[in-house]
Image (cartoon, rainbow, N blue to C red):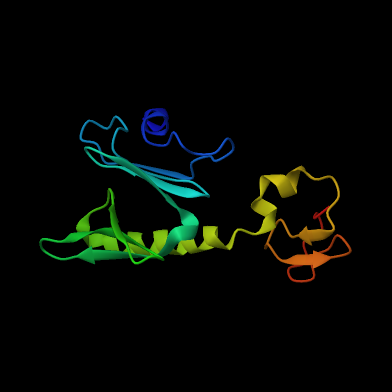
Length: 151
């Protein structure tokens, strides 16, 4: 199911852009519809179309639980509002939306320690803590959290 989703509507992800979360909303549980969250994008597919939204373009995520108009909505910086698939009961939708929004904001912080090009370097002029993401120069102990393995 996950591979089918990646091969169907997650095809434009980068070489090292691995899925963090896959939500399947297809009736037959095949993975042909739903949402894929990666560190860089939200990919989603409805019955007819597939889309990709950059994590950096998302301003906020909100949930609505109205009688006729319930769902998860991404609001982009340009004002556009997009409904994305979800697979939870309506009574859990608000909590799920809040959790997902917090995680998207976490991904938007993008500390250097999650950047592949940063990780590939042997020596780092500016060190980004692998534990908390704090950037500092000199030494191998993070002055913010005390982590000692930042070489």
